[in-house]
Image (cartoon, rainbow, N blue to C red; front, side, top):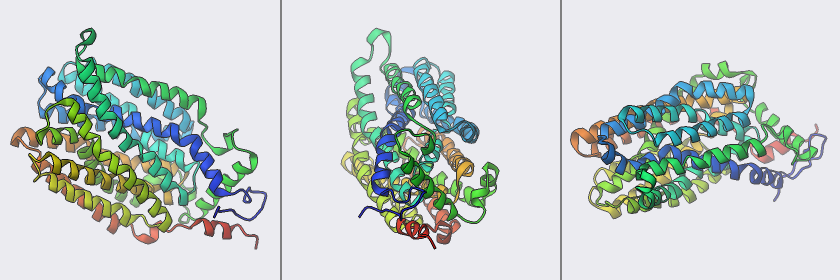
Length: 452
């Protein structure tokens, strides 16, 4: 049944399901495309490392430090970027971010020394700072809470899609173009994968609007309907939260609890994104094209499970156990990987299960901050959560790289990472009580709009 609110001047007679499908089809494909190329540009170094380290004489420690420096740029500029977003709007912010990360990715092809490689990765983090929380903030301007997790799940499809498209594409580029016009295979990788974000940035500038009130492709009743839903959403937030601004979010202790939880999420994300090619390589697969193709298998399972988890979380309005339970399962897979060396079939199965759990938990987790924060507070709160997670993201690759260089194996690093992930899930369950995430269903919204 299509959810419709009683008639009224606020657009409440507009059927909600067709309305939000219309909004989703308008903004989600382009936003999803931006996230796909963002994640490819962020993680393509995982495939490039196989040849880049050999060509330039980089150790595992150099590679791990470079990966970590990406997140240092994130840490320093994530909150400032989203404070600027609250002033100039999501559209201009996303355009700025995408154009700059495309240019930095292109320049990474010139990084032929460890110092230049460090600088390039740091600047890429600076360029991409603010994209992820900015995109979540953008979704919060268009979808009410009870519909937002499934939209977040659609947005998070960019992660598995980048995992499906990115490694095979990167492997093909390196396998096919290496040596052409005097460029190394990994240089061609950075050159060609720098172009999509620049193009998509121009498309965002052309087709996006900051808020429904600015959308000419919606009629007046539809704009009023979305405004009414978002206003009712804010009325259900905890007392006073909707009046707070950026500083209020930074004073909210729950923001920092979620930041600690995100440390586990980001540690797991690094294991999925940056170390999967090396784990596959260590299991006995040597060809770079084969590594890229095998690395695309886990995200396929992750896509379906993630969408189901997001839909189920919205239907039940339960967030904590959906997120924490998925992270616990992923941590168990990490431990399993530490004992699966030399068995490529078991490695792929564990990577697939771990990736599916990670995507599912992350999707639900990042719907939590906007449930009780709104407006500038939501932008700053989400940015602070991702900034704290970036602290773990910056240190864990360097730690794993050092462990790999010292012990000759990633096994100990994978087990330590699993411990951090489990700790994050426990902090979520203990630090965020269920009563803090009370939400209303679409039926509740309809009843609240019936004239007394």
